[in-house]
Image (cartoon, rainbow over all chains, first blue to last red; front, side, top):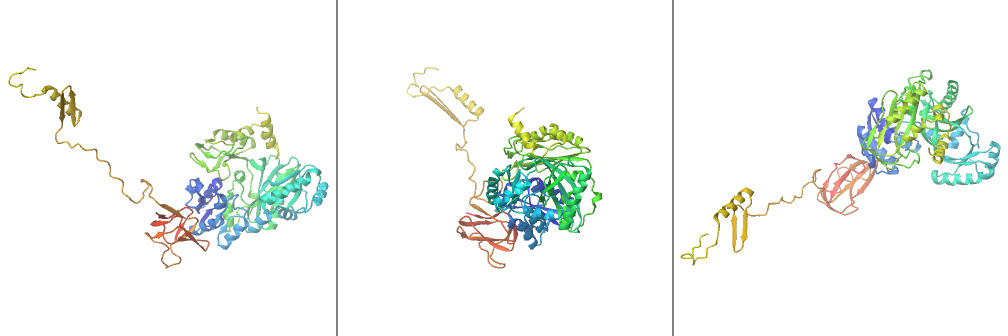
Length: 451
Length: 153
């Protein structure tokens, strides 16, 4: 087992990793920029190293500084959290050279799943259902036009180097295709340095359903159920829940088996999430995230597992000590991402949190690094914290969420708490009857017809 | 007052009321003043304490130039900080004399330490010219971004 883990991240996830390490008796090192010197995890970790100025490129993405921090503290492993360097294959290779263990998947799988065209080809050949589309990159407009006609409009032009909702352009009809192709290519080149694009059929009203998997170094791959993350704004998840209101036990078991069989063939290691669009009872692969995800707590609450702990154990060479039959889904969990933004315009609101009170009680979990007197820096994401609640049923969960939202206090800045307080009263949300367009439709309607 | 025109007429004697003087003396005691002077047409009376030095209040001595502590005003000069994370070395190689010693005069751009990171040696130049007043680091110690290296004045 590792003696000392360096946490290569910040904010709530750095605190999350610190907590798991501490519970395992592992010493921790917090690395931070000058803007994060007062961060909670920096105070709680056993050691801290300031690695650079506020800008992420010179701090949290600064590979030499992070490796150097490992060297001077003697850390034998790094946990990358999510975002930043968590899916940077080059980073893993450098750590390998320095005999520092990376707590995460293998570099080859991170690289594979980071290339969306290659990922789609790979999972398709492993038996995972994919969205109908071009078989690889489209080179010419003629090729695209022919394919789109075969698939049927509307079609999405997607950047191969994109992902996470970025680098997608919609063409509703043939006359929109050329423009969609051109803008997608130029934006992809600018944002990702690669203008390769592929086509996919556009699904009208799908849900976003993702499967959490976990794999040890001994060939065992298990799934831990699904999460429904359909409520999104500009492709950013806002509310996640498990299990999905749309799936039953049979559907879950079927897709779970498909995914675990595929990843076992791949020889995957660590945790990962296979993301699907789900429509009319059919699953369509969109991408795989080869890291721990923001919304992992909802899975933890329904399965009783500590995913960060399992990540660390797997990276240290331990086998998973449970089987698929031991994984039980109990009750229901919902997570709300609380951001430092205006709840309806989403204007960022960094600044001083004058009062912070996290709700508590049975089935309430607040994953946040905020505290009274903490100043949210403007250089990073706007996540204040995640409020996750668990209940024996979805209804109990909703009641508990309403209560917890009313108890949560984040004073001094604007947050999205009021948005969630509104959402939990909406009939569609209460019924679990929503898709990936629901939230944006709701916000648009609200703006044009404020009550 | 008696009008003693006869034998005293030749001496110019002021018209002093001893009770008035005693009153002034009493006031002096009561108020703690050092001196009281009263003037009426033609007559001025001044009463003063004996043996009290009349000097301006002694002010606190100006603060001496001392080593900076958290409670005092910041010392002068520039603190050069580390631009990277790693291990700091005061000389170019083990056993070699250090780049600079306390008291040395140095110029902007002159190498003052080496920070070793990932097996590469990075020369760190001073960001100020002047005299090396204080060296905050030990040879071979770990160093973080922004950590003070030396004070140059």
